[in-house]
Length: 90
Image (cartoon, rainbow, N blue to C red; front, side, top):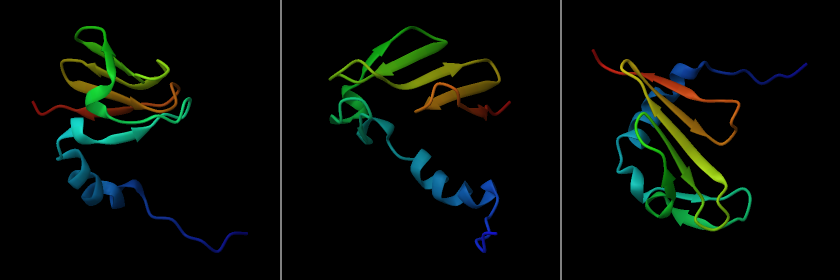
């Protein structure tokens, strides 16, 4: 049995608020496929609203997907089986 305890996701609110409030195009990422390190501003973006896909400029691997709906924004980073849903203010 593990002696480690965990906190719930609410403990991420403060740290993520700091990150999500920053200029996103200056964020750097390392491609898991080709290992290229590049800022978000250099991603190749495809699609139109409501859905955008950002791909690695080195190998075309999917870096992120963003889908905007009237009441929500969906953000996928990494695995295509997982996405975050953000509720938009009314």
